[in-house]
Length: 144
Image 1: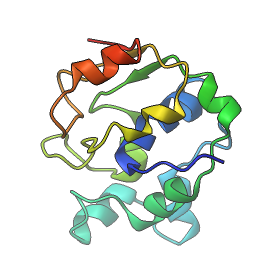
Image 2: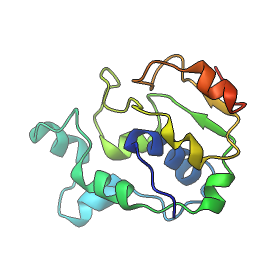
Image 3: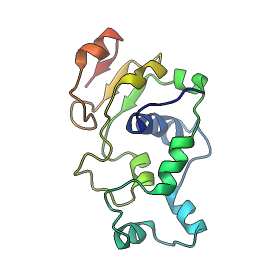
């Protein structure tokens, strides 16, 4: 199974496959995960424990260990970078999108997506690295 180098790059991939296409199953739910631990309200839990601007350990561990096959990765032709992604809620239930918590730090993981042709939203948010249009263009990836 391919290994991602940048956790924040992996998250939009998970978004597309798990919450969009529903081909990466089962879908992870932070609500269900925390309820199983006796925590009924993830948002209140995050606020009460000063975790509003962090990725919860339970979500980080799950998504970090999540294996995605080369076959599934090859089905990706589009990624969306947007502060409202479901996967971001699952990681940080009260995140407000006003910081760099989910900014992508590297484009090295593009190698894992051989059929990627479009990244939507990359110019507006989500790339903590300088936007490298020439890297995308060299791979025939359009960004908007």
